[in-house]
Image 1 (cartoon, helix red, strand yellow):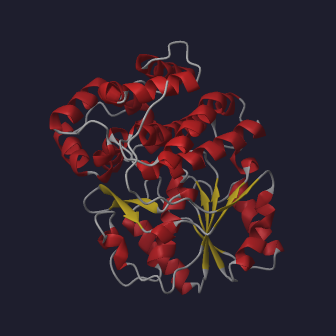
Image 2 (cartoon, rainbow, N blue to C red; image 1 turned 30 degrees about the horizontal axis):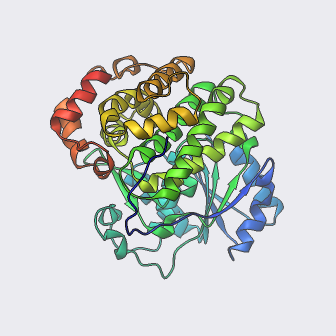
Length: 387
């Protein structure tokens, strides 16, 4: 099947310097020096600070003659307070570079810390709306080296951070082109300790990025190609990574797919993320898990508008039924294989304020990328299906 997309004028970008391979974390000291820095601040989360990935990175930095600082006050859904505390740690310690280690939460917080450490305006003034990003003072930006330990958000290759505004319990996308890390160290060995259920949830996050990017009506053929290949890799390797946590080939392929999903999402996201953001902000729930629960119901809602794209995807993935319905069935089957909750209620969110969630989802920046216009009725129908 051939899908013809109308070529329209648009601006494209593609990300950063990636050092991929087993054991590449040993090169982190050289990477710091290559960026002209000498006093790195390692930013991670409390659950990871004593585990192998962070400890190995600290060891490698010290072996290179560096004396790194460590900041780990980052919540699973990072908040403005976490960022402010990190900025204070960076400034008071005289650090000139951020090493971001962890999953999406740690990476997002670290990128925001690096960005805000040289700003005088509020981070909330940089919400990804209109030209807010042009308010950033780029004269003294702190460089970032990103080291992902999960294959999910792909935040190591992203130009934004999702931060929860403490007072409003609202997730805010903070964007600037130069938030993209300067160097990424993608070492599969650092992901082998990830538990199966987190591997599954983060993998479904990567899948959601690629799937929503593919679904978006925005014209970006390069991102669309990247999204398709990410989906192919995820179908092959996510079940293996969950079942065989020490399988370095599966772990490496999922890191690649996760990064590709993040590259692709510049084409757009949609209802999965528009709903997951308020649900995560209001209930402090895992983002990847929310995406997994919402995904098939959003696909069913969008299917009439993206029938051709889903048929193409079904054939690329060699699904038994090469149709939109076949793709939706694959998602349901994959969730079952990965032993993921099928509904919001099953993940502990039976009691939600639908009106508030829908109101927040309608104005979420991701809503505009959905292939079907999102209004209150449509969002409610998705939520009801997912309950």
